[in-house]
Length: 239
Length: 129
Image 1 (cartoon, each protein chain N blue to C red):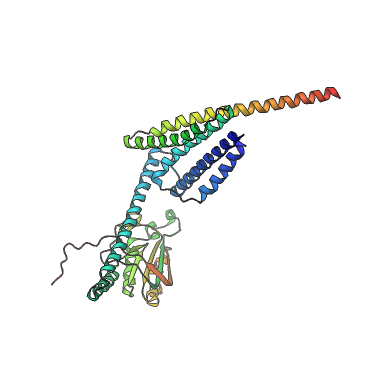
Image 2: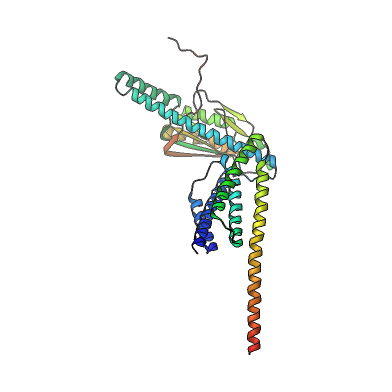
C-alpha cells in the first residue's frame, strides 16, 4: 500500500511537470506565430530564423538602454560635488533634448494617416489611394512650420539627419521601415499645430482623395528618443 | 489511485503552466523535444505500473535522463546541421504507441472479464428463478 502511494505521488508530480512544459510550449509558440504557419518546411525554417534574429535585436536594444542608464548614473555621480561640472551636465541635457536624444513629453497633436479602404482595382489612379513618402514629408514640414518642437512618425523621432524615403509599399525613416497607418506625433502649441486641419489644407486634400487623415489634439504626448547613432564626419566646428 | 493522482497532477500543471511566463523562442525547440521525452516516460511509467514492474528510481532517472539526452541531441544536431531531433521524436512516439498498446490491452481485457462475470451472474440468477 505504501509503495502504491509513493508510486502515485511520483507519477502525479511527473504529470504536473509534463503539463507545465506543454502549457509553456503552447503559449510560447502561440505568442510568436502571429502569421499562419506555412506548409513549406523551408518557409517555417526561415520564419524561425527571423524570429530568432528579432529576439537577439531586441535583447541588444535592451542592453544598450541599460548601458545608457548606467552612463547617466556615472555622469551624475561624477558631477555631484562640482558646481562647474553641474553646469556642463545641464548643458548636455539641454543639448540632448534639442537634438532628439531624450524622450520628451508635452501637449500637441496626433495625426493619423491611413491608406484608403476603397478597392484599388476600381480606382482611376490607384496610386492616389495610398499614403506616400511625400505626404508624410509635407506634413512633417508643415508641422515644423507651425512651430512643432519634437516630431515622431510611428515611433521614429525626426531629427536633423532624418530622411523620409519611399521604399516600395512602405516608407523608410531613419533607415527603419514603417507602414500604414502612420501616426505622426508632434509637440508644440496645439492650436497652432491644429491649423494643418484648415479648409483647403493638405489634410483636407488627402481626405478628398479618400485617404484617411485625422488630426487629434492631445494634452499628453510622449515622443520617443532617437535610437540610432549621430555621426558627424565632415562637419567641423569653427574654433 | 494512480489515475486520480495523474489527473490531479495534470490539472495542477495546467493551472501553473498557464500562469508562468513564457520562454524565449530560441529555447522552445528544446522544450518541445523535452516534453515529448517526458510524455514517453510518463506513458512508460503507467505501463509499468500496470505490469507491476514499476521502479521509482528507473522511472525518475528515465524521466530526466531522456529529456536531457533529447535536448543535447537536438543541440548537437543543430551544430552538425543534421535534424537528429527527428530520430528522437520517431523513437519516443514509437515507444509511446507500444506503451499505449499495453495500457489499452490491460483495460480491454479487464472490462471484457467484468462483462463476462456479470453475464454469468445474470444467468445464475435466471436459473434460480
